[in-house]
Image 1 (cartoon, helix red, strand yellow):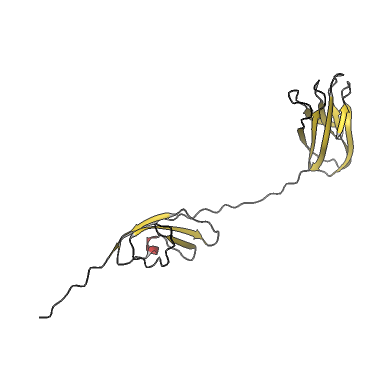
Image 2 (image 1 turned 180 degrees about the vertical axis):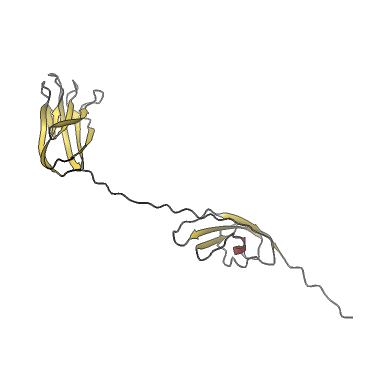
Length: 207
């Protein structure tokens, strides 16, 4: 931490250092600052290679000893090699104008593009029908395609249907499909199935 008694002269360098940069690169220049005197809070500027940019203006409403964060971004353009960076005081008040700075950072900004492909959710539609004696739930699925999708079947109690191709109980069944390649799963759809038992075999008397 550097505690500074600000000068009543504009443009005085508070802190400086030479930094090596490479061309055509974004750099972030940041600092934490706080007032150490409530009178006339500091006004500073970042300076890079002799050019001022950004403003570090401590708020008069913030109590002394409360750290505030300031940052700016600079592009090196054609600049390369060692260049000076600095913090420059722009407050000319003789009374107050006392502050502290810490955690000064000057670092390149690295960016990497990430390509994200969003796979669509499968859309499941059902066309249930009634059946005699037993029912194949796969027949309720429009476009049933077990080579592309995994199908999940549950009954009204949330239990997995062990043999969806041969259900014998009427009820409401929930079906979802999951794309085998992408792992994307459809919204659940319900099908109400009514199983009608076959009538008993009629008795026939021989004459």
